[in-house]
Image 1 (cartoon, rainbow, N blue to C red):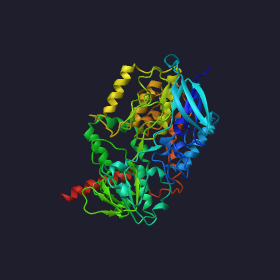
Image 2 (cartoon, one colour; image 1 turned 30 degrees about the vertical axis):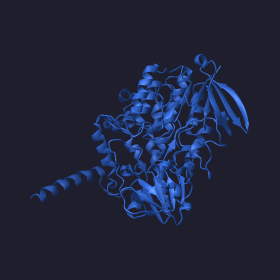
Image 3 (cartoon, rainbow, N blue to C red; image 1 turned 30 degrees about the horizontal axis):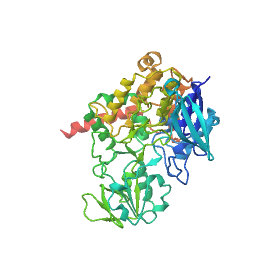
Image 4 (cartoon, rainbow, N blue to C red; image 1 turned 180 degrees about the horizontal axis):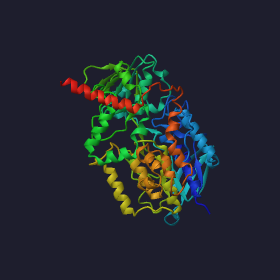
Length: 532
């Protein structure tokens, strides 16, 4: 008899978890509190309790090829970076293609998940759900928590003296939907993550004045990278990752700082990170520098306090009138249906092995999917997590001893700075490629690049020097997909097709290579003549 698995949430993590369960012959039941799939990527005009929310204009920060599931590429005519409605359309296509809908129970809220009385031997869970006011009890062999971490907004008003006297309007960025609310107003956005910057830039179209308050600063990048290619297809390659992680940390940090500063000098724009020894999540925004240089956005330091109709900034004389405050201050991690003693959250982190398993649980039958912030795409990361988890549930992959897992968890919680490669400012943030390769090795799906250079050198070159798209985790091992090689070989075709809408023949009579040679010769001659 197939093991029954309860999946909580029908967003990205929940949907791919359903598929991974089916791939391993497990019996999934997904509980979704709303009336539709999509989670974060389904826009609604109103914020729904217990569900992540986004604003109307959200566009993906990772491109479609890097964001695709391992065996389901995006349509070639989809744009490179996607409006949230197209991401949702892709998820609907995924659900239909793999026939996942019948495994989802909508308008069903999970009330509690508790250990079954004989958990130490069976590993089973008692799950209580509620549908239309009626509670239902069921026993499951395993549980996959796929609720994410963007549904419980953090609003630390106690850190802002005088906010209780402020006579204007304030709200968390989760409540933002459209820029109309800012029309003719003086707006202050507190926090410089991706949402905060997006909201500030949008507000410039209608607001009287826009300010961003940040103490830590941030590296700001454009989605459009070298030669107009998507940033992540250039940055996230195996070759570049090996170089980054082999170099001493100060050199790696300097190289990244130099690269992102090629667009504009962050110090001149008041954006340079305060602590450049660790990597913060970069802000992906194509318009912010233009807004700053034209005076549409003013970057300010931390808030010292508020008055009835104004804000006072640290180390800044006087006060600034403000009408609306947007707190882009992040989210709390919470699992209201689990006992606090089971998953204890401290400092916005939980003690989970590989961000997934509770090390001291007698049986590894509870997994948290998606509680991670990789430097790169999320969709393929949570899919690999789910593929590993379902194999652990089935007994095909084993976890290390408890002592080994606890040692790694405790070391991770210290968040020490690395001597080599990147260090991150928060525990939940991690190197996407290194992390996924670790899980892939446990499953047996990590591509053997040296062997591929002997067997299929053309493919090996694409995998090693090209973008690390997730299709390569379907080339071998469990879940091998016959279309993986073709998907890798054609990934640039799907990337370029939606932008090459006007093709012009090259009128040059010289090969580009010859132009480069003549250019170098001209440079050498110019230098020679300048010294003579």
